Image (tube, rainbow, N blue to C red; front, side):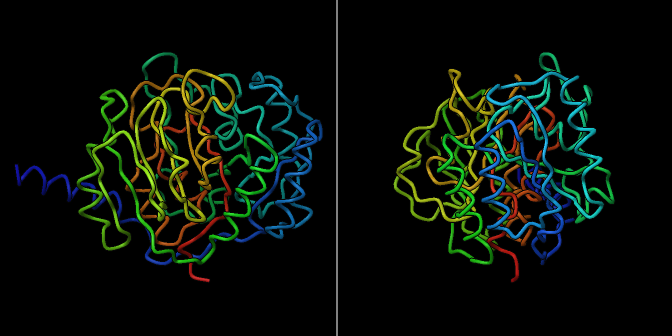
Length: 337
């Protein structure tokens, strides 16, 4: 048994060891805001984010896209995407999408569609793998230049005010070097608790970087130092009882957490309502492939080593085609200022 554990630690050590020890936060020149002119809230969000993050005005890309719908089709998206590419300055490495709907493009999430372009190899019907992201656990600092992709994240929320507050938390996070804890929840839901098998090794390897608590429970309550919260349930109770530090990342492994509005399972937006700065969920049935969800060890290791939120979170998902990323992309609580 000890031999098996040692081998597991060695393998996961190799998986984590590629991350740099000190990482500078991404700069405003590397980020473009995509603004939907058909959506009044999108225009307000884009303006607010541009001012808060000092994004160059020429990095604001205005598009006309159907507003207020959960999904758009492949043909409509490809027309919009071509225009975005034509208007994107060469320096831009990341997209921030300033809207809450649509969050899906046919069989892909909207963040993956803007990252890779629409590509059905990132989709799956039923319990099947999808194409792997070239960005997964990479050391790329310039993904457009080096990998020909632009990782994307939505500025989405249950209300306009909630999006503003999420942005403010991300800005406040920068360089804060918080005294924080990562909570790894092992739940009673066997189908959705599949990430828990990694927890022991994650704690073994990363406890010197941040306090890590492995909790055998469906509920975490009244904690005041949450930087990471990873769990696996259809719905997570009592999340509003906790205090999420600026820059906090929280998500629950389930089938449709990326269905932002409606559905029988909890939307990832509930994490943002509770005070988290970013979350992730799938928009198409993923089945319980851990590769389609964030790897907590990679997120924790890269974020605490100073990578920005969009870098650390995106690099933690091997098969991200069906998953949507929502949050303040530039938050960097552990970056050296």
